Image 1 (cartoon, rainbow, N blue to C red):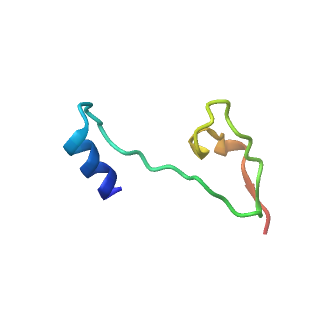
Image 2 (cartoon, rainbow, N blue to C red):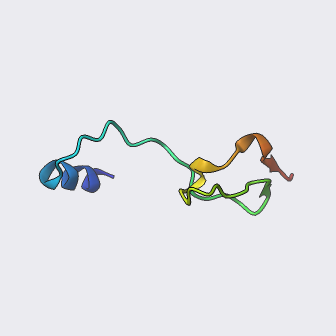
Length: 54
């Protein structure tokens, strides 16, 4: 992340307001996650429908 921010600062012309936290992996015992059409990492998932199998 530090390297990405350095590249953006040195070469970029766009203002980035922040780097939001995202989940991009889950264990096999987590269910109910259905990918969003956006194709983004789990940021598009609906965690209200997720469940954990103990």
